[in-house]
Amino acid sequence: GQANTITATKNGLYATGTLTSSTVAANTISNNTSGIVLDTAAGLTINGGNQLTKNTIFGLYATGVNTGSTFQGNTINGSATTTYGVFLTGVRGLQVGGTVAGQANTITATKNGLYATGTLTSSTVAANTISNNTNGIVLNTAQGITINNTNKVISNTAFGLYASGLSTGTTVTGNTISGNGTNIRTSTATGGSFQTS
Image 1 (cartoon, rainbow, N blue to C red):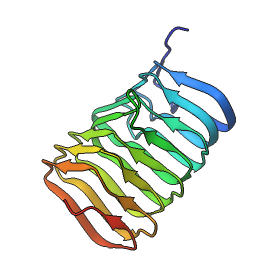
Image 2: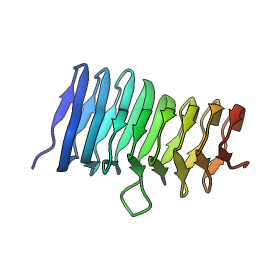
Image 3: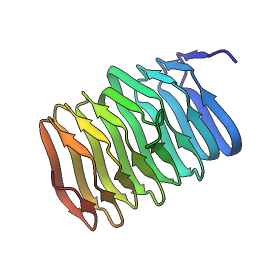
């Protein structure tokens, strides 16, 4: 099928419910308040080069149980206008990126490349490039999320990784975090496992 262009709305794409075998691919989603919203959306595949650009608050916003849903192979370019490239709040079972060719996302030119908060059990962030944002990854009382498998968190002007609050079950290991204003800062973060360099 042909790609869609979705622009100038509150939510470019809003997904909820059981969406097994549904796919969102190769669309341009720009100049909305939120590019894509996942609200307890299970089994949805978002891949194949979607372009999320200049969405003012969120590129991707995800909350609730999203078991089996994936966000892979997409580009989020905030063009210095997007507050959060990827915002995860209490989201469970979502995979952002992956180690197979074509699964990595690129997140750039936002204020916060990836922001996570709440209980995030079984959610993973793997092998993405998060660069040239103000902050690369922000974990604010984020519990149970796994951020590993060679994410490249580079050239973010303030922090590569900033973690604070209760972080039980959260692991950040095996990534490249370099060339940022401050590479890693764990401020009052407790209970998680964070790489140190």
